[in-house]
Length: 102
Image (cartoon, rainbow, N blue to C red; front, side, top):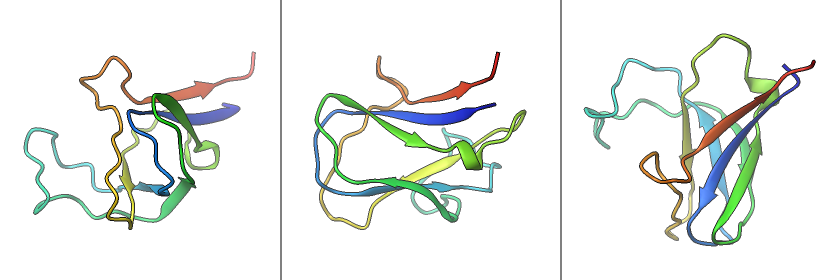
């Protein structure tokens, strides 16, 4: 593996920073998770400063991703400003793009 890039589509633009952090507890399921029982958010892996509406945001996770593992991340911000990122139901769902050497 030569690189790992998390691509997230921004529906709205913002000058607000968000942080991509690790989540080590993978025992939850999407249908059962709530704010009250959400797993703890771990260390920040990378962050981004501001982004334009209707654009892809690329976050480099190369130093945090190894082959043959499952990954769960959280996207958080300390701002009260709302940001709109595309979800998995969107045509522009998030992608983890892995590049390998030939």
